[in-house]
Length: 223
Length: 404
Ligand SMILES: Nc1ncnc2c1ncn2[C@@H]1O[C@H](COP(=O)(O)OP(=O)(O)OP(=O)(O)O)[C@@H](O)[C@H]1O
Ligand SMILES: [Mg+2]
Image (tube, rainbow over all chains, first blue to last red; front, side, top):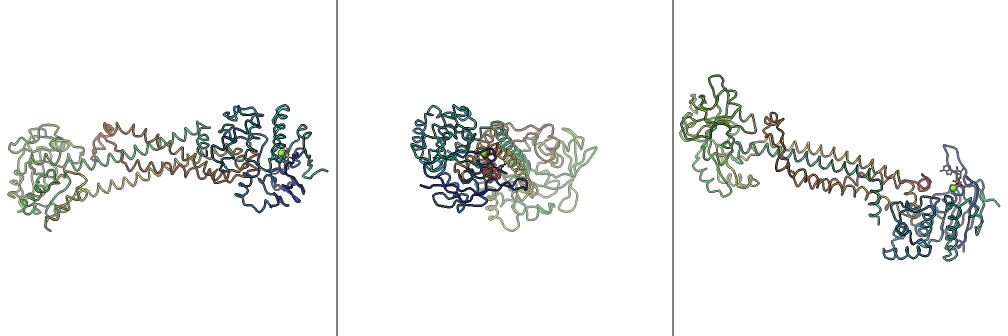
């Protein structure tokens, strides 16, 4: 089932008056349950594409269709709600809210979508159990290692049962062993819960394990 | 959970939050203290005036207050006396003969208000008898006069010295009498001590050759708050030939000054509050800029602007509430002993006395001030957080996430 589709997506940044063509016409179809890795050299437009797919930024030209609806038709407020209900995010670093404990971080997005407190706790706990990070529950981000923080970030990204999880270089700050554990986790969630994952990475490990590999170069998809 | 988040955000940079809290607390204490001090001083000025001579209510012949001539004596004082005696709200009253005159010693002379009083009655109405610093307050002997310390200085007289008092009589002649200084008083006002002298009423009546005429009834009511009521009820029983004046009518300048001071305190308060607003804006802006990345994450995961806005306003509000509670608490602890013991400003005695205030000021915290602070400070903290909160929600999520 087709979930995300882009049509001639273009993004032009303005850098001190000089236009920078970060994306030059991306046509892409992503299906439910895909495990897609966007690879490419630095500056090729990976982050730009993920930001557009994640409704964090708007394209200069072209369309993004989510389950058939054009994201450009949504207001800023609607996009916020859209992200809350349908998307999960994992960033390279500094993902978690530093003043909240691991379990509170996971509960936070459920709180935003109005899930009652006891249900939140229950769901967060069972997910942490599933991801084997239960012992981190009461730790603050600064008391966790980078790998532990990323695993909590995965939990937060999927706890609201999103359609798509977007992860921009999630393993970039991790050593390969820790990165591998994180990838296991995401693969498992992809298989068990049929959550669509879209990564960007130039990490060989990630690229090797890609379900679908998409190579970007100079803002274009390389065939 | 939003509250929890805000609360913890405040304490992530303890030093900054404590500095802001500290400034709120100091601001509140400053407001309490300044207002309390002003209130205390003005109330003292007023109560000093009331207790030394003005009393709560005065009754004269109509026009006397504006034109204090000897012709303006009170018609039918016996009737007024009866009316006052029957009034249950009146604590005490005294009869007075008041006239301008000249007092001279061997070396100097000075214009004065001659107050002819009934010593026993006057004790109930004013505090002159308690302000005697040398000698005594009338013993019943002949030719006794009680004068103020400043006047004694000016005339260069001490206890037992002779002075001559002179005044116009209603018939146009000049009445004069020799007196012996039996008491010297010192009040809170050097001006008063320079210009008021006290003589038994009968002696003044003889000197002015006015039989048993009097010029004034000075009244003290049982309840200070009922002065206007009592004034009106007396007024109803008296005809057009009298004037019944409350201390507010008699001290218009002081009452005006009190109003004026309240206005200026208002400005002082606004200045402090503005300073607090800027302090809060500054601190909250820093708090927002420190967290740009985090705000980006919050936006990405779908936290709506209104919630981010609220979170930051809550941070301001919490600081405001804590600051208000601690500020009022500390302020109370500081003001409580001051209110009882007073603030001794002995080094400024000279200038304070020329204002008619004693050297010891008793600051009073009014409920109005406390309520004002309870409302204003939390409100201000929210207002101070509005701009930073606005800045936060105006962040572009993409920019914010990239920001390190
Ligand atoms: N906000 C911006 N303003 C101007 N130019 C930008 C901006 N963001 C990205 N670019 C430019 O757009 C191009 C694509 O950037 P992007 O961050 O998408 O690349 P990337 O593939 O994610 O690179 P990396 O692997 O280094 O993260 C680059 O040339 C970059 O300099
Ligand atoms: Mg990138």
